[in-house]
Length: 428
Image (cartoon, rainbow, N blue to C red; front, top):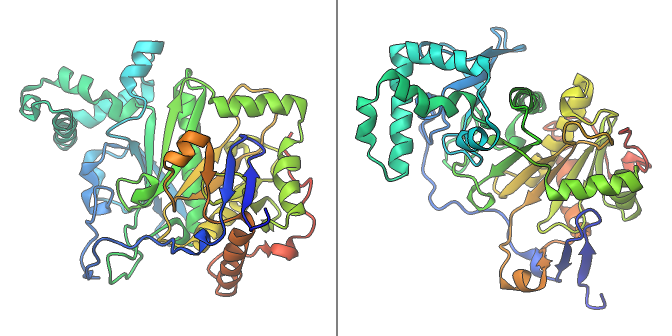
């Protein structure tokens, strides 16, 4: 507009966003409430996700550990309670103690029963004294949170305890947690270990381990129509702990937003090239690219957004080759690193629902949660985004250039180096 206001319409959702001049100059880093010194020799115990507090989360469905030489990785499934401290998990997968969609929902609505593998894990875990006590403590915590009497757990027999803990082993809301709470060697408690503080190789394992968990939820629950994968970083973005983690939630319907995109795809199969990558290229909003993915600034999002598109022909993340998965991971990692550890943000995975006949690229959106929608947005449906797409491009592009020069992100083409990326998505 004449005064510099930028009005945007999201080409996929129709969301209307305005950016008003000057508001983008506000600081966006989250200032911690309290900063304390850290004893670098003391084990991490800052929250329930830390590796010294393994028994405050539900029994592990799996963990990813480094091999003895430090270069390889091994997945350990259904770790027994007696072996929790035998290895150091770099990433852990376990059920959420407080599910968004509960196991009771799946059982009542769909007659769902947990998988034979999950049932066997529960039986084996409860058969050990350490496992039974771990589970009892968790059931106490959940009953107390619901304003019940946690003392009732002490008198539960084995069958009752098993009924109360079934969701720990076979629920459909999982969490993937990274090892570090703070960066290695941190001396202050505001030095949180974010996605961007991982190495590119570590981030690849984080993504791959999460993809494995996603596929597992689809495998074990035949009623799951969609698995939502997301990451909340810092409290303004919805995180209970400032400890790096992703969540995976199975739901029994295709989201309305995704359904609309599927309808649009039947009319315009090349939708994501035309309205995503091609539009970004025309507007000078391409950030980075490699052989297997491209990162652009998103248009028409409620918050400043970076979008990473997979260039793979495969729609499902688990159908990507290792090289394709690494290509997506590298760009997501670079965008997190450019965002920085003090910016609250969400990472959202957008994937094709199973059983859908049309192709859809895997894409990941990083949203900077740096403003709060208020009455204006609610009454008008117009969202105020404090940073316009071109200002966001400049901010992120300069950081990516510095990070690449420092060797902190993988090699990739940046900005004008990317060449003509239009039509480069190969899905379908």
